Length: 200
Image (cartoon, rainbow, N blue to C red; front, side, top):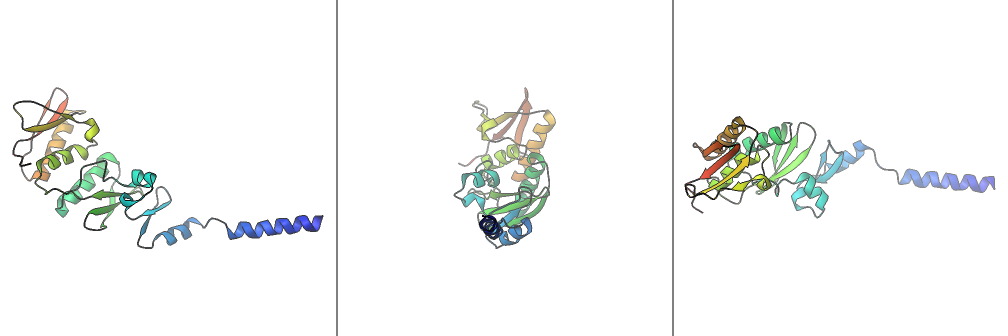
């Protein structure tokens, strides 16, 4: 009986060692195959482009393409938007920006996280996109915006913001995207941005 019991225990030990989970170092090394990226913050191996993943959780956690307006094509403006968004919304900094392909950009952050942005399908001078970028980099998505239906405006959106200073920051960012002073104002606790010279 004792011999049988010892044999069973020894057999289970061999099976257990054969199916043991690889160490984090091994998992990380196996992950770096050109198709995946190791996310240090979550100790997870994810596809280099999570936006194309069939896994809804992976897409939700690491793909920003659906949550914010797409990036401008100009590299300087693109990097400015990424850095400003990561600083203001994710409360960290950027450690690396990598072009995945002609549509997507991968970003590693100083806190060990990873996310992917998508480039816009519109030209960089698309007024509504410039407006939305101003709101987005301060944490305002479509769900926080209101359409301002007023006769004296062409097309405009507003958000309830914390202060006039924050509104001015939003307007200044939209201006940087537009390469000119963007039409905007702070009024009754709201930041209102206006597109007057739209062509769409």
